[in-house]
Image 1 (tube, helix red, strand yellow):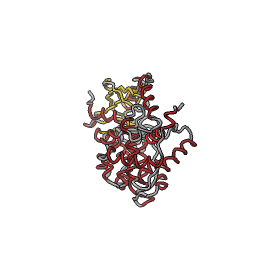
Image 2 (tube, one colour):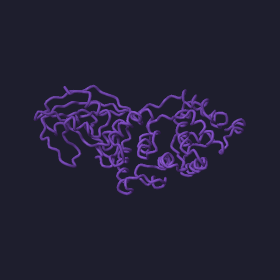
Image 3 (cartoon, helix red, strand yellow):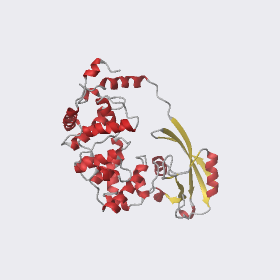
Image 4 (tube, one colour):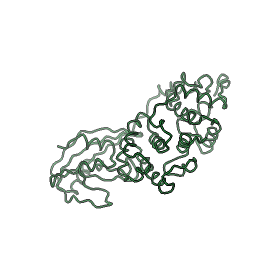
Length: 361
């Protein structure tokens, strides 16, 4: 229940944008690489990469991705496997497939140009309302509200609103977000919301002292109390899944090849090429025998790979086989690949590390 003191604290909606813009100009982030241009291609790539991914992680991939695909037409013309290979390590690979599909839509339907309106942007593959609004605001000066998870938290705390739990409450928060838009400085305002949510107004450790609304944020005390409760509460045990990775290789015809399979469109690493995963070594060896005569086998060092929702405990099983055949059929889910070929495919990050850094015995 709010106290009498909390009820007296209130942020006036008309003051929200000016205070946020003033804070952003002094304390916000100004040196991120995608801020150096109003090119919608560069902004779009950054916005997709930043979905569910920290800025420091995106910084390690952003420039390399643009070097490989410097413009929209280069991305649209590239095979999907090359895009997935460049994305390897960023996770949430559905984003990369949508990025590729969107690039092709833009070339085929819009002549290689980004539409300027939020509605038209939102109709493209992988672009939701908030992402479309960010592109429209940063590149075309559109007065459109963003409302990703960080912004929902900022507005919820600032205006004492619960987290949207249904379509009606989400619609109400969208209406609030739209009503707060300033008549000018839309880029600084939008960036300020992003900066505040990503830096000070964190989920569990908010820096209320540095916030431009600390004096009259009705949820400031709640945020600090939530931080204390979170610190005391025991953390739920993370789920761990174990997989045996069949690392089958053939050394016939003077070349070493590795067997890879494309994963299903659902589950972990959807659509990526991978060493086949099995529940146990017996299942992995059975598949190896189907590929050829097993000559030798060896268990590699296990490795742990952290996903958002669980940990993977991966046990590589290196198996040397005399393959029944090395030819690959188009459209088949698996095949033998030379190492340099394999590394050009879209691979999960731990599989890429194995193929790059570990030499089979």
